[in-house]
Length: 325
Image 1 (cartoon, rainbow, N blue to C red):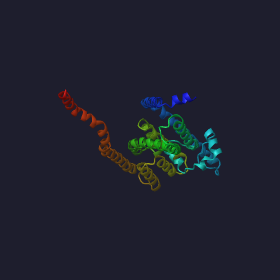
Image 2: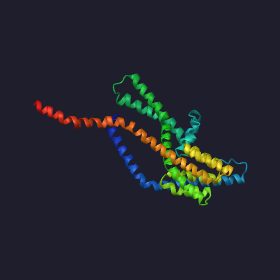
Image 3: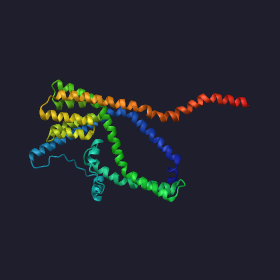
Image 4: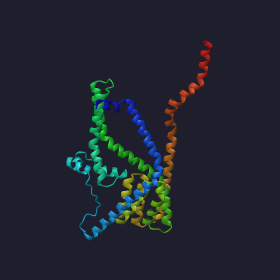
């Protein structure tokens, strides 16, 4: 057993495993473009299932006026039972966990149970692995207090690891939505000005924008379902703004709420919002371009200047060495 542990935790073998893992993720990234259509179909099916649930809940509210009108999915999995048995929702309470998971694309009670389960499990996993590696396999010649400090640091890192993962997923999802949102607003403006209702226009745009951003297509399809079955249309727009958490989309949702509340022309509001979102996208691109020279300074110093010195000074050094001979 010790030989197997030494073989697995050997630095060379670990490096080989990391390289294999990076190659695997690279291949998966290259294959993502091939499977994007399947992902879109799966997400649209998930939105259709949510629409059916909203319809069913709406009908139950009509039959039973005193019933709760909120949508509730059931979760009877292993993670749910462990979380309830250990009372992890109270022990590791995070009041914003539902919004964070929604921004990352995870909805319903099952992702919440999974989040609390891994938030409880990861500190012990990382802490135990680090302790075993440092105290049994390779101590790196460090004193005991430094080893204990490293183990405690990995324990704390395990506690925050699920939050970092959710934040990373939410950032990627928001970036994909923001990149395609101005184009979606232009399409939405064309559909509205052609005489389509706002629900039909959003539904049409969600079908057309899927090739550019699956996440935005999913959010717009979900918006159509919530517009149809939530008690107030304002709640649907506020839900979209909360899930995306972007100032441009929040402004669009606010404008659409005000347009429906006060009866102002929706096409005019969409035209103004589309222009503002295009300007936001352009300013973000200009900001990245302006920060590029500063970001290239360190790579140029580390990678370009040594090569340049070798090319310039190499022949001179060789000539001096030949003259000495």
